[in-house]
Length: 603
Image 1 (cartoon, helix red, strand yellow):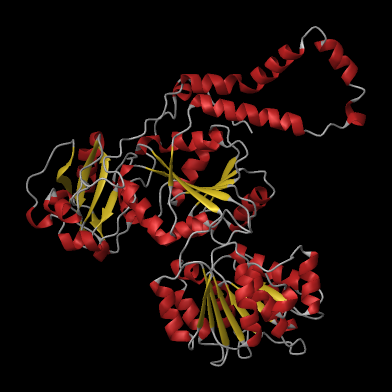
Image 2 (cartoon, helix red, strand yellow):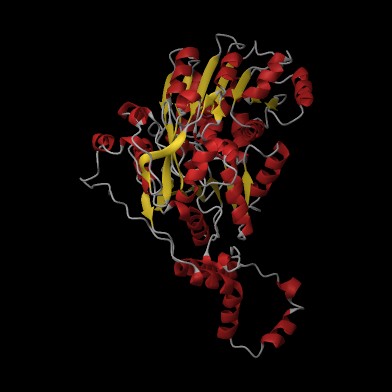
């Protein structure tokens, strides 16, 4: 392993990073730093989140800056405010012993006037989110004509967030001869388009395999019925008393609902999503960083670029539509050489997506068994014992109080005291799990090696009218005559149901096709949904909803003829997760809750 000195890093920068605890370069730094210091060729670096990418591009950029030129020479674009601040802070730390070098973070949610004043005073490096930088360009308050180095950090995330047009506009403002550095965890087609459009014969540096998951992360999935997802989440959280992690949900509404449930059930949790103001997001993140919150429930967008170390777990409360998003989720843990666990709560219909993810990340998932109540209580008990063993005792502070305590407990034997401490801490937890039903693991009809697993052609021939699928037990599969052509996605469809149906309806699996879609609702709500939504309009088009033939246990419609899902539609259509809302959201979450009890979180 080489040292930073051998890589060519200047002495004043080495002094700063050594004070920060940097001893040896990480693999991505060892590969990228000497190349950037010795060449002006464009570079594409593919490496997972948390592998030291900021130092990989930051140290060479700092070393190449001309301090005497008090104009922007380097531009670093990143997707989120949090990552912007993180990068700017790191660069300021790395440049501690470089006099007169100024780094300016430019992002939305803060005073644009103060950023304009800083630009007028002069800066050499700008770290920016695309939206705020475009605003400054339109105000003609930032000059990018002297930029020599452009870095796109987490480029795939910026494209996923819809910044393609903004990046195009920004890059049109920088000189043609600039050096461009693109850092990304994955290599989707959109990134390839950027490289062809803006980069000249780039050098590609890959750490590991493209899109591969981190070696420090263990991948586990728990198979449950859709209605049991929240109960499974609670048991997983209970089984890891010292958990410090992020729970990823699909929508803002689901994020808030799950966070509210966890808080009501006594867990140390909070939510992070786009409906929160910037001040609220900052407050939540500050609590999470100092470990005042153990479980952060977040959407993918809100959790991108978070500067949080030492996460023990990432929990996927349902798998993402975009498989590459899984790489980013799991990359939030197992960072900087530490180990972590990525947990996915799935049901049978999502098993295929597990296999797809395995191929992408080149890692195998373990199938976990939902912890029993007895196992959880045992794990919590030993955690308590461990805390008691390791607690620091301040003799001076408590010495005056102890004689009275000793006299009070003198009639008890040591064993009796231990029993009472355990009972005091765990009586309610034990009562809760004594009354709680064990969570049933659904039978997985098709194992990984099962030769009887039906191939796509077999599925295509059967049940064409319901898209080749049958509804989950207790649910009806409905047909609706709008699809991707109408700019419909799962969130849009859920919004239509919420808008047009008077009462709350739990939605199961959603399949978006090219010109129509299918979605599942409880049998009892099927006719209500059909009646409420039929003859409504979406973007000037009249909506038609009816039960798909073979689509569940409710009333069946007749033959749909041309409305059946064609093979080509299904082949092109994305395979969606089956639960966009927890089906247990309107039900009591466990027997103890039905009795009015509420379980506290012990940690």
